[in-house]
Image (cartoon, rainbow, N blue to C red; front, side):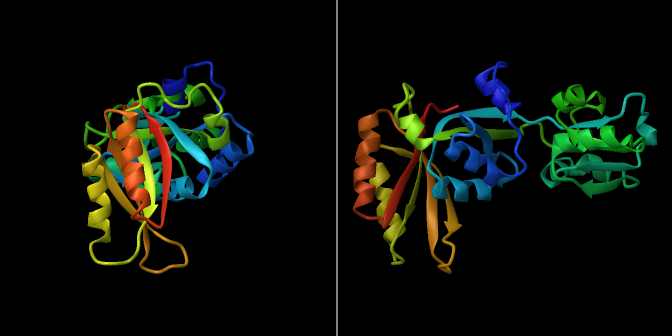
Length: 262
């Protein structure tokens, strides 16, 4: 849904089983790009995707926001009272906790994917099972929405990134992004008192607004961290000045992308 919304209905969707495979296909040129979630307004960040962004030569080219609506979906003709089991991704189940708690007779089971839960119950002919998924999943697999909008909070949004192979992106017309006013960065620091404060001061000095900061552990180095930040800026010169300041205070700095804020 995010890919279609961001890129239009003509795009060909190539499904992958894991996020690591998604990145591998982008880097190898097997696909032109990927659309992946990076953060949900209720559940927080997708930690695995931060790790992969740092490790792989990809570039964030665009971002989008999608309102998340969860629906109870079952086989056509199924009555709500026939449902004994509900399956979906753990995050979706968590975001529908109040609705599920009010129906303690339902057996709630984790599944690998929201849309996949609908595909599964349709393929297996499960008459007593419903999935929690977007409306598009019902249309895609010939299922039926029994109850719409069962999420606990209506203000539920997921932020998605469009990822491109870094070498291809730098050589394309999309580089640099026209009108870019947001950037994502990763950097690592010396483990000394005040080092993070002094580094963050470089953003203020350049007139760049820090909007998000996230830390992730460095594999194989206990209690050392990489910091991921999102920033807003008014001009490319501001962003360049901030990067110059960071380079003098950090072990390593990686610019993950400049793009237009959603």
